[in-house]
Amino acid sequence: MNHVLIVSGHTDLAHDSVANKTIIETLQMLIPGVQVDRLDTLYPDYKIDVRAEQAKLQAAEVIVLQFPVFWYHMPSLMERWMECSFVHGFSHGASGDKLKGKKVVLSFTTGAPEQSYQRSLSSGVEIEDIIIPAVKAMCRLTQMDFAGYVFTGGVSYGDRQEHSEQIIEKARQHAQRVAKLIGGL
Image (tube, rainbow, N blue to C red; front, side):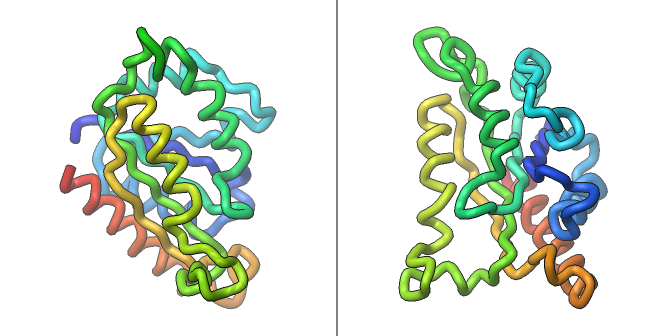
């Protein structure tokens, strides 16, 4: 792939993340020329520069949505970015075909371990029940291709002091899986 855009939806990547920060740093080493769009530094006020973001989306062949799961959703900043950037006439509608054929990869983490996402547990859901259906629907509407996802659990920021080396290693492995997925597109 010639142009990969990673959109980081973490709301405070520099100060409030070990895993997502490591994933992005590792992907920058693994994928030459990757562009990283850090929404937290670009839009701490949630005022999205729609034209700039749409231009980045149009230039990309692969769009990686990188984020931690907050309360079974994407972070609010990433949701806001999507609300502003994916608008009728640009991404969908009669003349909205600017994203047609682009590949979308989800790359996300949770603080809870992977096995916490089972219908038999208190959450009552599997990871495939949350986020993924909404992104697949968005891809259908915008004519983008959902290319898959990479999920890593058990990387809680709250555990960073005690388990930072393990979190960093899990994050590096996550990034390698993302790079492999992209390489196969």
